Length: 426
Image 1 (tube, rainbow, N blue to C red):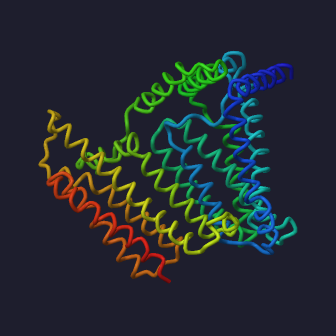
Image 2: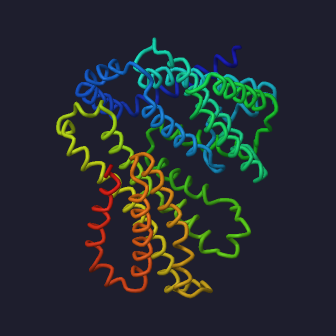
């Protein structure tokens, strides 16, 4: 027990040193949060109290937020969620290390329970609501399942096992999405979580070589933060980018025949994802402002017309930022070819293969936006077809005739902005 006590004390000391070095940003963040709560806090609790029954729309929004958070941690090259000090691997035997991991699981369970209590209250509006327990259980189980699945994916060695765990996660997500409607489904979801936990705690083979390398890196970053060493932190941030590029990427046989499709996937996932993330965040924020009454008490946002305009801007940002990110990656590839990079394809074939992934992305985003906005099907089809045409025009003329694209780009952007409003027609 003394060993666990010393580990806990060391963790507390690290947090205290970190707070001492970062107290100015922390104080600024606290002041900002206090200002935000002062503006919307009172109205927020009044709106929550006015919710007398389960709200499926809020439940779906929270589910999407949790899903996005879990997916970000589910990549094989992501950092581990269960982190211990590197020396722990040398001081303890395998059984003791598993006990430490179980304590880490317990910490995450407590954190998820507290978070789920708040989310369930926001969803049902009251602790006495009939569905409060089911919603609370659904949130808690799903968060724990996401932790366990991502931890298993982190430790797998064979690529096929990743697909198995991802398929399991899809099944668990479907259970969670429908668990609020049936006690039986929630019970099945709970049984699945318990089985995964037992497997993870007792039978999971930790990839110690990879794990030790990652926790040593995280420990270096923590030491630099505690010492407020910005030079080392900048160096470690560059090292993190290089670590993601390390290793052999798995490529399906289909993509071996069309290598530029795979090149598009790699380029966008490594370098060009920031504008895409910004577009998704803009749409998510404007959608929440438009649909959740808690934001309507903020000055200016009380007018429906302004919320309507912001939502159109969010839809426009979602597609426009993404298309610009895709085009930049294609433009950089063509520029490298002009500077001497050998690519054994004609320019038209490069554009064709590179545009497949952006087209699939645009179609998927169009379907998701259609579902969220409850748009008419024929308007959604028109919007999707025009957006696909827009991305192909941008890709083709941006490479073949950039001067022409520069002349008509503003007009195309205005057209896309106006098209974003047709999805709002009921």
